[in-house]
Length: 214
Image (tube, rainbow, N blue to C red; front, side):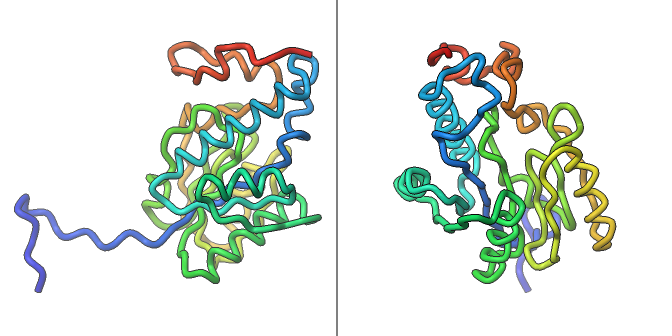
């Protein structure tokens, strides 16, 4: 029998194996709704910088990037991420393929994190607990991060109202839900106003320093 820890607490069971899945759109095509504020090259630079932030936040968990663009594949592989090529599947199809891929490779849980989270600093804590963990965007409409059991058959429904759809899906599957309103993970970038991160949230330099304009 294993000895109890010196603090008298019960030994913790090993954490389930988990990996982070990051869908990444072609950098050159990303963030079209910022066109009135940022030019093409500035949007490309911003998209790549945010994706790198998310990959760093995934450590120490392994990362798989789902994509269908050569530049993204080269970028991801150079940063030590596995790449799953998902041409023509769209966001929901690519994420579903990625989660199935992780399940086949022995990962019990998949943390799906969008690539446009400039304040992301840690993702590993999301794998604690059972069932489904959802982190909404700060408007309470979208789903910025979702941790799901990889073999649960969870159907993703990204787009407007995805948070409600994902909560309904968890209920359909009978999975315990944990909803976490995390300020940093809840901040994504879609519109020009999203670039104006309050100073108290310590935004990265690539948001506080202009990178170009239209």
